[in-house]
Length: 203
Image (cartoon, rainbow, N blue to C red; front, side, top):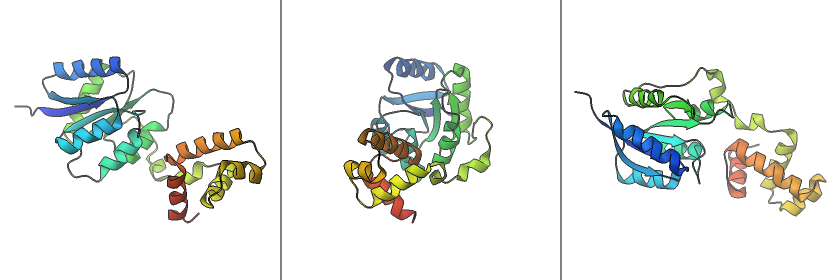
């Protein structure tokens, strides 16, 4: 007899969340434990209730799937994670795998493909599109431009946006633009994390 696997689903879109819920509720291989529109709600449920499989949108607020995966990765009772995303960023499958996901699918994948991927993950397999696995160990600092590296070093010295603009001879709006890119490339959310990252990596 096939073991029924417990599932939790997280997606910020109510319609998508309802559709996925109905999809898994119809499949006798799974039992739906909970749904959430945020990464925090997903995480809270996982900490309260043992769950076999997590299905999560890559852009789930507020943490995002990448940070969520990082938090869950070292927990022995964490669910095996299936991540899906739009086809916009070809680097997302690599980032999802590096963060600890067990499977990745595009948002427009057929319904049966998602169900089968979840079943494969429950059986201990990984499901990913072809990718160059040599890139999995890529240092995120390698993706920074020269200006972003200069900005990172200046941030580590405690510079304000106004001071950064004056020091780099750019506008405050340009500083904010570079900061957003810097945070995204490093997978960080604020100045404190950026400064900690800088000194932890001895840049």
